[in-house]
Picture 1 (cartoon, each protein chain N blue to C red):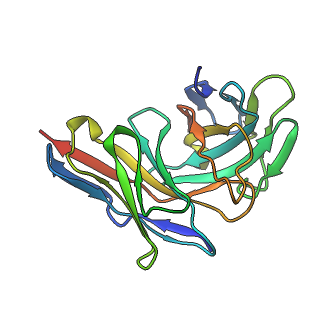
Picture 2 (cartoon, rainbow over the protein chains, first blue to last red):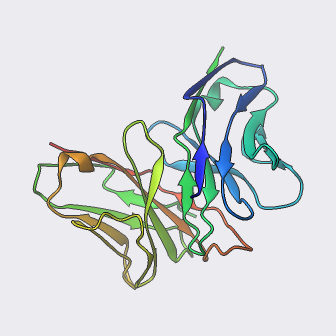
Length: 114
Length: 118
């Protein structure tokens, strides 16, 4: 069965420092992976996706993610965190059916302190 | 281009009442997904609809829940005889076309409807 795990409930980082939010997945076949961000009382906003090709994917707001097939991971990264990056981050994998439904991890709260 | 619209944003219902949640997809989008977010959990897929068709309802509870996406108007998620366990945030997402294996396009999410059952 397809699944996504985000092993950290919360990540704390100081402003200006690099950040990493971890995600591992389990799928049959080729994985299609997504990162979304949720601000308080808002819907999810798409950040980036991996389909195929280059293992380093660049997305919105300076975020990037590194796909690692051998470790079945898709960690979200940013070289220099901003206080405004504080939010709830979800990793998701597309289910292998043709309907496009997404399977989400449980989310990681990122707290960036000034 | 307006984003995905959901209303109401907050809905309070007593046990046994009906809840109707509405979703208007982005302009030009004809594919709608509904997800439920329980407290302290990630989003769980419920149903996928195209205009006038339910394509995948594998995540829908077997009873009390139904969804539609008529030719005209918003998509509706309907919960009959609500119970406290239905309290959650319900998110709608839309996409312009079907996400097939070779073209896994992203979904665009609305702000959600927070349902509270008292």
